[in-house]
Image 1 (cartoon, rainbow, N blue to C red):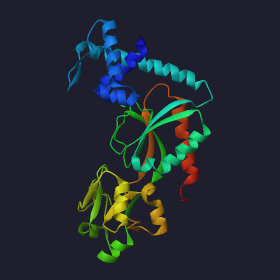
Image 2 (image 1 turned 45 degrees about the vertical axis):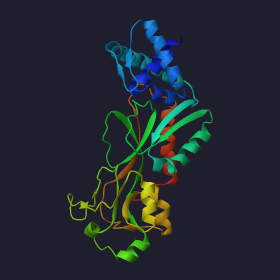
Image 3 (image 1 turned 180 degrees about the horizontal axis):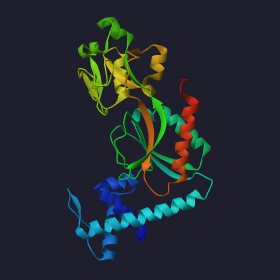
Image 4 (image 1 turned 90 degrees about the horizontal axis):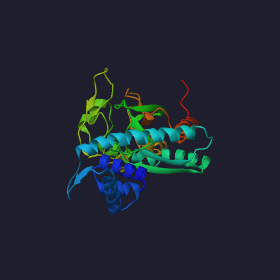
Length: 302
């Protein structure tokens, strides 16, 4: 039996709490994963997990063994990274997590150029707006667009700065009249992005540092592409990041409201689990994207 593979399977099953989820992630059958862990238990001479049709739990022995597996597998990964650092080529598989609206646009273009530069690289990209624990889900690299990083357990590298744009369609203003001040938003149809840290309290510093606007929660959604579609139809007002509304603002399909009112900066970060050694595919991907953004969207002159 390949004990190393069995240990890797055991670790993912334990971390995900499911044979099925681990099997799907690794593109294996659940019966195969279950059989390999059963063989591992037989070889070790002790039960690592208790499992029923509805529930899976580690035994006391299993919990202790899991910690040893993590330590051994992490040390092995560091050793492999050390060898990889000695080579000039970017190879292997790079597992990436990123927000959907960013990933289907600018990030996809930047990563496509990176793959063209390093054809031996393989990508495994998971796009979702929900928070993901990179280490627990076994990702190498994540991208976050945020006004404030809240998790200090990762190494963060700044990639690019965006703006938050308060947007509506010209048709909305034709029906509802001009908006003269940020306080007018309290009487409008506003759309809320559910993953935004500020929620329905929009951070518009129109009258001092504590003058955010509490807007009506007309539509709440977890996806800014969906929100953009509603805004383009003239149904309401929402806050969109530059990478979601850049072309629509340039063409006039969307209008930006109160562009001179101060608001928090929005930044794109690359984050990765802190380890002593980081694979070249991670560091070179980050450096490539920093250069790609700087060339594609240079910062305006001061």
